[in-house]
Length: 211
Image (cartoon, rainbow, N blue to C red; front, side):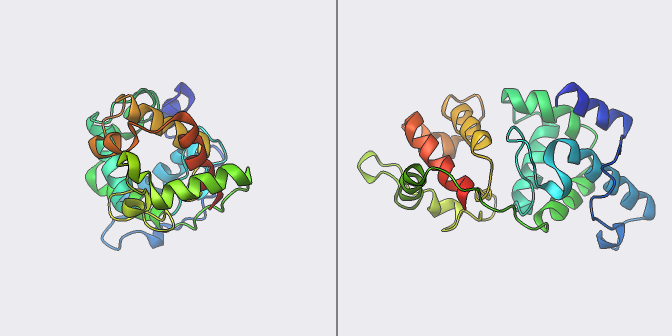
C-alpha cells in the first residue's frame, strides 16, 4: 500500500471514513462485539483507497462493491501470504492484509460482495463496440477464448472469476499488462491474454468500464 494507506492500517485510523453505511449488526451473529468493531474499523480502513462501501473514485484502485466474495477472499489470502507478488500488490496490499485473520477475511469479502455495484461509465462508442465483440466472441482464429465464458455473459463474475463490469479501465488495463508480462502470476489468464495487443486490451477495458 502507499505509505499513507499503510499508516492508516497501522494506526487504525478511521478519520472521517466511519460513515460506511455499515452496521455491525449486519455481520455474522457468531461474531463478538469486539470482532464486529474490528470489522467496522477494517472496512473504514479500506475506504481511503477503495471508496465508501467499496465504490472507488480513484482509477488506480479497484471497485470492491459487488465483487464476488470468493474472489475477494482468494485475493486477500494471496496478499497476506505474499503469493500475489505483482508490484502493486507488494506496494499496496501486502501490508494491508498482513494482520487479517481468516474470519476477518471472510467477513470483509462478504461485506463488499453485498454492496451495490458501481454504475458503468460512458466512453468511446467505437472502442466499446470493439471491446464488446472481443469479450463475447474472443478471437477464434488465434485461439483466444471469449472472456464471457469465465467472467459471465455480463461480466458479473462467476465463482473465483472476478466481476469485471463497471471496473475502472486504467486498473483493468494495468492488470492485463502485468498478467501478460507474468509480473502477476495467473496461469489461466496469462494463456488467454498473452497474444492480445495493447489496442485490443484498451477496447476490452473500455467496454468493461461502460457496463
